Length: 183
Image 1 (cartoon, helix red, strand yellow):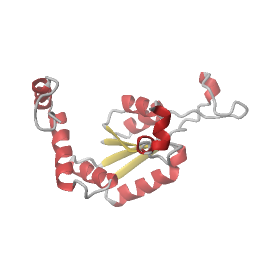
Image 2 (cartoon, helix red, strand yellow):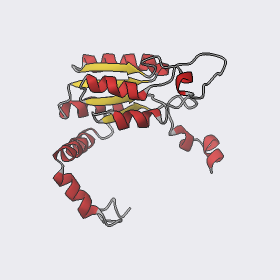
Image 3 (cartoon, one colour):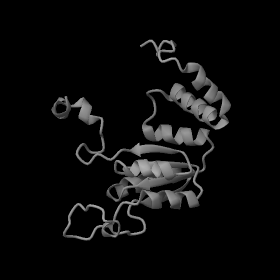
Image 4 (tube, helix red, strand yellow):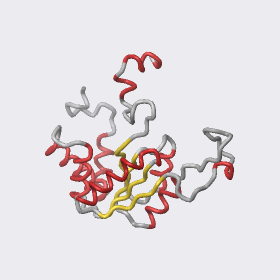
């Protein structure tokens, strides 16, 4: 609560403020994020905030890195963003068709061929397209980390993968039935 009221509760405020002030990019991004939050708090969905933020950052070309299991959601997201005037490049997780056997990766079903998810390939394609902002649409845990690490553009998440809770991972801590497994 002290931090919320402006007290430097961990003793690094001065160093962090200096970092914001020394990086024009970080300062601008933080200022735009704060502006969108202040003006649209509780008024816009995540999609609405994404559109406002991208516009205010002057991003014109957006990338979508999506899971094949969320192809329809990615297609809808792309259609909305294009209708809003953005150029959109999208790439599926199975890009390049690299079979799991090639890298000796564990498979879901050992009896059937299975292409691996390829976040490095997704990042490479969107890097080549020179997108201004990348949007994760349901990449698996770990794949999202690799994609973010190899993306040259900033990355935000629109949908988090959760096969059990209909892509609502917060449900695990909101539901006592799920939470009792962990606590």
